[in-house]
Length: 159
Length: 109
Image 1: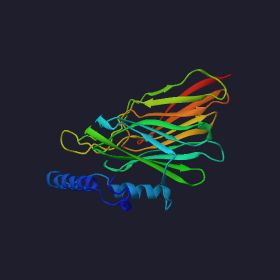
Image 2: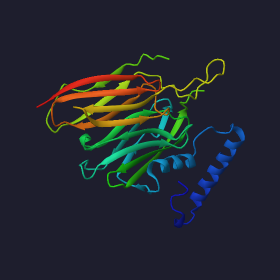
Image 3: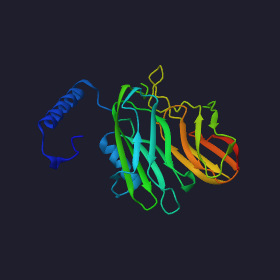
Image 4: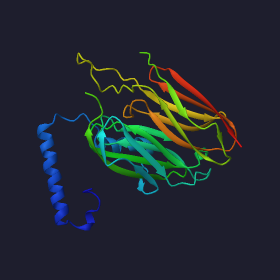
C-alpha cells in the first residue's frame, strides 16, 4: 500500500511501483467508462456513519479471503475476532465493506456472548479487484479493522 | 414478486454442554441487486434478503443486516456456545416484507 508508511522514505522499488500503478490508473481512466463504483472515500464515509469519529486500529480482527477470486459472484469471506466473548468483553458487531463495488456496504453481523467465539463466514459479490474491509466494534467501544485485497477475474454484479 | 425461498439449516440434533457449535444457514434467493438490466435495458428492481435473525429459546443470539453485495442464496455461518437444550428459530426478511422462517430443536446433555 503506498500510504503504509510515508516516514520510511521512498525506496526505488516503491517509487517504481507507485509510478506503475499511476500508469495503470491513468490508462483505466482513458479506456473505461466513468466507474459507477464505491471508492475508498465512499467506504470511509460509510464506515464513519457506523462508528462515528472513533478511529479503527489494526489488530484483533482477521479477515480471510482468497487472493484471487475467479468468480466475483460468490467470494468466500471469513472473519474472526480475538475476543473472550464474555459479558464484559465481547464483539458487538462485525461490519464487512468493500471499496470497489457499486455500494460499499456488504453486511453487518451482530454478535453476543452467546456466540462463545467471534467467527463468521459468508459469501459476497465483487464487481472488480478491490479491497474488502472487516471492521469490528467491541463492547468497550474500541474499533478494530483488517483489510485485504482480492483480485477478481470475472466481476459479479451483473450487467 | 414472490420468490420460492427455501431456508436450510445445518445443525446437529444433540450437543455437549459448553460445546461451540457452528450453525450453517442458507436460503435460496436470487438477491436481485438492483444493478442489473433486463433484455430491454430496463433496470431490474432490487429485491434481496435484507435481514436475518437467529434466536435460541427466545433470546437473540445472532443478527445480520444484509445488502445487495451479498451473494445470491445468502450463506452465513456463526457459532453458538451450547449451555442448554432448546429451540433455535431463524427468520429471514425479504425486501417485499415476507419473512421466511425455520426452526431447529437441539438436545444438550
